[in-house]
Every structure is written in structure tokens, then in C-alpha cells.
Amino acid sequence: MNDYLDPINSVGMPEQIDSAIAMDLLITVKESIRNYSIAITEAASPEVRTTIRNQMEAAIDFHTEVIELMMEKKWFHPYDVSEQQMLDLKAAQTAVDIAGLKLFPDNNNRKGLFPTPPK
Image (tube, rainbow, N blue to C red; front, top):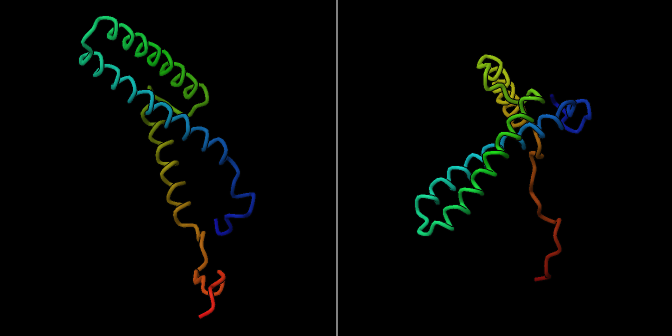
């Protein structure tokens, strides 16, 4: 992949971006569930604990929805380790390929591009 501007090199990229966003969402939801569980132990009043518990249960339901979407789209394989490993290796290779792209010119000297006051 030498020409990152060539549209042929973007084939499949929207789906890869969608799966990355979904994975980030999943990680965020898991973190919020963990934070809610800690907050419950720190809450002093029963009303606050009930409110936090309700929010945590809503987050758990949302976690289930995100997992089901990712499994339906075949972006996540929690019950098939070899399939998940193949997906992870493909994602890692894509990251390495993107990192290897020449995105910036060798000469990035900007002298003369900006107005400068006379001396």
C-alpha cells in the first residue's frame, strides 16, 4: 500500500472503523460498570446506593446490547478464541501497515510560508 490517497486502499476501512468504535464503546461501558460497583460501596445512604445500582444495571443491559451487536457483525468472538485471535492479528497488521505509510513529506521546512514582519 504505497498510495494512501488511492481509494482502492480504503476498501473495508469504514467497517474496521465501526468495529474499533464499538470495541472502544464496550471498554468504556465495562469501565463504567466497574466504577458503579465501587461507588456503591462508597455510598452512605440507601437512596444513593439504589440510584447507583439502577444506573449500573442499565449499564449492564447496554453492555449486553453492545456485545450482541458486535457478535452479530462478527467483530467479536468471545466463544471462539482462534477466530478472535485471527481478528486481533488482522487488526494489529492493519495498524502496522498504517504506521508504515509515508503520510508527511521529507522536507517539512516551512520557511517562507508564513508572513514575517520586516526587520
